[in-house]
Image 1 (tube, rainbow, N blue to C red):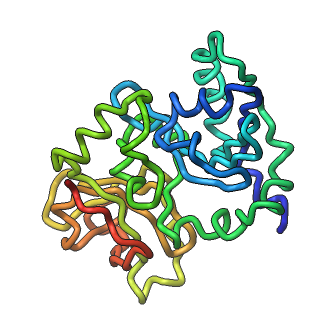
Image 2 (image 1 turned 180 degrees about the vertical axis):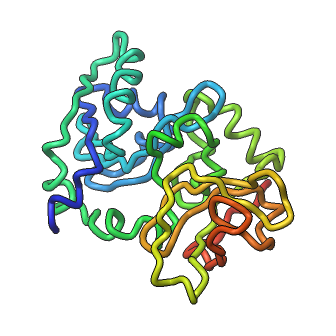
Length: 248
């Protein structure tokens, strides 16, 4: 693939005997059970369960794991994770030069080029500390394990799932057909409005041409939605390519 398409991404590498164990205690997914040369989605949360970063984690070996994330949050994420290494036998480093190799060997091209269409939201700088993973559907796309041990925010994430407290979800939308030639020219974090409501009901979390992922209050999922303001581009719901896991 054209390596210029990777310019918005970075890699944090965790190397050492405790690499998997360390990430097991920091991220929302299970890296202890992940087979070598496989990858999975994961969230890095605050103590309040809000996502600080999202990753595609690739287990190169038991002591070598690569975390692909947005470049605009990579430095801050690496700094924060490094604060918790303490005595663990793991070294965290910026390994963004690995990107072409990772994509070539681990078939990540389709994900990178079609994130929005696949309904996979990636945390970028405007979205840091706004969502629990379920608001971005991470429990429905294999980004959260409810059987692994503790990690920052785990109690909040579990409580959101098991007490039916998920009031916001991420949906795939498209500009109205007669506006399809006009790309959604807004920015991540732009407000989404429901016609008849004075206040916004959600935000844009990612967009690609005429498609966007929006996180909105579930009670407005059937409403007429507009981008940016009440008279903005009409957003039409499209079916997500995966089912949403029911609240338990």
